[in-house]
Length: 245
Image 1: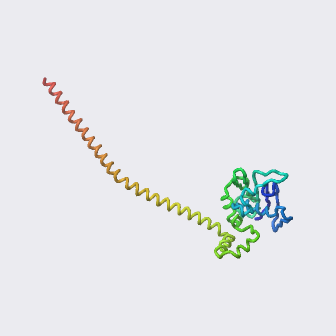
Image 2: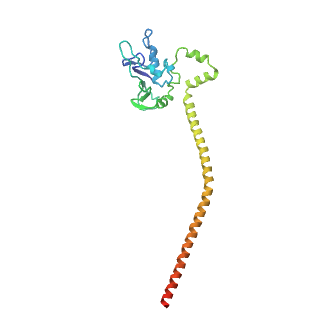
Image 3: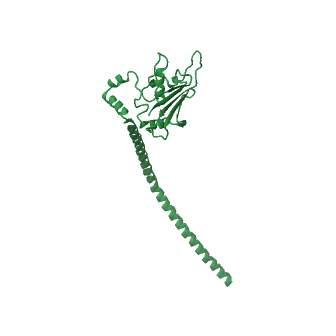
């Protein structure tokens, strides 16, 4: 698996659509200062899902959109498409090439993502890349000073970096997600138990009322039967007196 191509449009200094094609092995991007070499690296980090503007050397995320120049007006969106050669099948998707696309709109400040042209969530891209060791938090991009920062970091922070580089990050995410679901389930269970106790508390007087209603219905039925019986006897007596008269 290797990076096959990178297409930038409206991203930082790349106002025009620019495509860089790569071959297997080592590729070096060279050029004078200010030619956009660092912006190429920023584009890779950005399309992989970078969320903090500092990750792409910006004060706010909208700064990655071409801001205009003396000859060109500012653009309304930035788009980066990264194509990965997946001939080896390291990515769990049935394509020999996988293109990840991210588009940011200046008007809304929202990003849209796509895998091979199909709209998706950032989470879908993260899940796709998690088993390959490629992702926005898996240290595939090492910036200047980052190694020194790791060496000077606290032991627990250094361990976190090593775990992420070793691919432990995806399992920790899944564990944390499962723990959140478990906590939510336990909270819902406590609420359900509280509701059940309240229902039981209200059920006792309702049962007494239901018993009284059933007793009332039974007595009303008996009274009706007695009235019918007495009415029948009274009618029979009246008929007898009429016959005797």
